[in-house]
Amino acid sequence: MKNHLIHISKEELLSSTKENFITTCGFDLEKTKHIRMMDRALKVLETGQHTIDVNALISDYDGAVYRDNKIVIDGSEFTCDFFSQIPAESVVRVYTYLITANECWFESEEEIMNFLYADSWGTSFVDAASDIIKEFIEEDARNKYATDPNLKYKLSKTLGPGYYGMPVIATVDMKNIIDFEKLGVTVKDSGLMVPQKSVVGLYLLLNDDSIDFPVECSTCLGNQGGCQFCTRKKKIKK
Image (cartoon, rainbow, N blue to C red):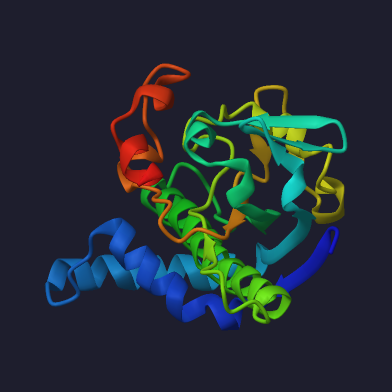
């Protein structure tokens, strides 16, 4: 599977997107003020959702691309501090993905609340789409490896630029293995993607369900290589 295109309709995502939006905004819809704010946000969605267009690309690779605590695909190398805790023999497959929702249209940045709501709607669509893509990858992994009852397979937490010690600028290298142009996504030298409501990352399919991916490690600010001395490494190796 290489740059497999998936289109996700807004209708399929709408329920989860609204839940994500409410959580992000911290709304309590039993409060009158928050109900009014949600009504305004829904109007922003109604007028701006015509520019929302959710698409994804997924590729998968043999686990052999992961070695020496790094991933090497078509000459592009990806490193992550957290990789020091994952033995090469535990990686069965590597999945990469790119998701974009374009943007939620808004009339003017002068209406600051409408701008913020539109921005949050875009993020909420991407988050909802990310869950769908994870489910697709999990199903693909089950289809490929369900015949091996002796191993307990586990999908890693989402990894990629900005998470678990992988630098944001790694997005620049991601475009060497993912067809960003196919989805109309461009990458700046800094690693910033346009449209901004885009996300790129990867999953590791592991044959060891004891490997842990602590939430607090996802955005750890420890110095590079610090994972080698982390006490959690001892837990993983048990």
